[in-house]
Image (cartoon, rainbow, N blue to C red; front, side, top):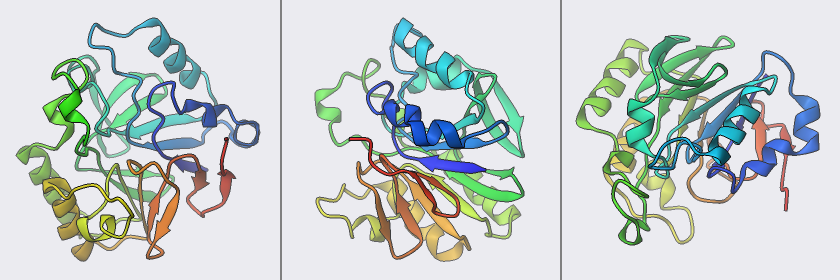
Amino acid sequence: MIYVTGDIHGDIDISKLKDESFMKKVKEGDYLIICGDFGLIWDYEGENEEEAYWLDFLDTQPYTTLFVDGNHENFERLMNDYPEALWHGGKVHRIRDTIYHLMRGQIFSIDDKLFFTMGGATSVDKFIRLEGKSWWKEELPSEAEYKEALINLILADNKVDYVITHCLPTSIQEKIPNLKERDHLTDFFEHICHILKFRKWFCGHYHRDQLIDRKYQILYQEILTLDDEIIVEDIE
């Protein structure tokens, strides 16, 4: 079984993963996908005690934890401190034995389903953050990552089962009240959403649980299966 949820922001929103209904449901061989703002690789001085505690917690669960990056990640550590590997057909950073960062522009085959992954988003609060300590310019993809994404999609005949990102295509994002500003990444998604065949697009970022146009699922507190069965609805 594959489960999908939204941002956990380090320890801030991770309690949904300790929800009893979720803990009882998951089993060995399952996968949990987090749609960005993982936040457990954050401290600019290196892995701290709190990060280690929660990473070890996830590593001891019966499921494998997978995540795309959001905008609230320490990209210097994420890109440099963890080994890159090939996993299920795409590039990953291995954080722990059962925790993987799904890199940008990749296509993964998991349980006979194809996933296109492309993390990143713009921090609207970057003006109050410090570069290299609480904000990193790598929050948005590089030209090389955009190019790799397009090449991989062409190789897949522009057809996957699911898309996992942190933010949405521009036109879909504009349907959200108090929407975030468009940027190069949302415009890139706008381009590919018109040429890509997919069943559902999952994202985080917007701090809400909302389905738009039946295909674009924003996640925050909810934990869903790919069949849209709600496992955790609201922990508050």
